[in-house]
Length: 206
Image (cartoon, rainbow, N blue to C red; front, side):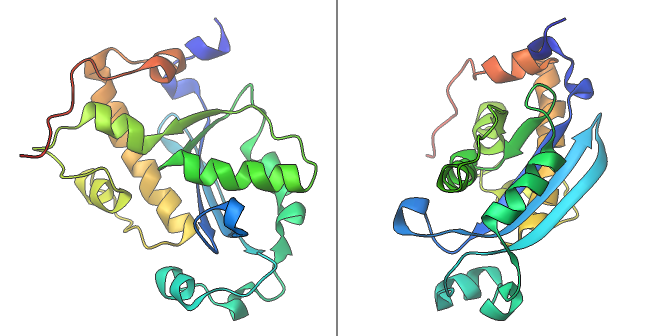
């Protein structure tokens, strides 16, 4: 059996979320917090959380949005110090699969940090729960696929609050809710999931 044809229940998924000091690395923004949850077979097998010193002061907007203050980041490790520990938590790219809600945002910061500090970013497979949710849910079920909408829809006890570990925990519940839906689409392996696309268009808003 190839790595891509592993049953979903046999794949370690590392669900992660970042808080950052701005919208994109290209604007000079940087990571301020990493939260991650590793799950296997529907069970949580590990959690990771750390503040990260972005190298500059936070704007009032970001502090209001996330609740993270400059004082909370004082003495935190820098991203080049955090990366090895986080990569070790994730595990091998042949084994673990990364999951994030709106993954292009989070991945852009991780890859930019790796490049800036001369780390070789492993070629992890990445699942975007926002993208897959759009394939398995209709507008009459949810009005949008924001994490703040999907978490309560799938019964998550954790409310997304722009804090990395809480948002990662909520995303875990969304992921597991999506997995339950995927059974009716005959998606049972990692390869199925990576190739999955909705066969009919999502009904537009009236």
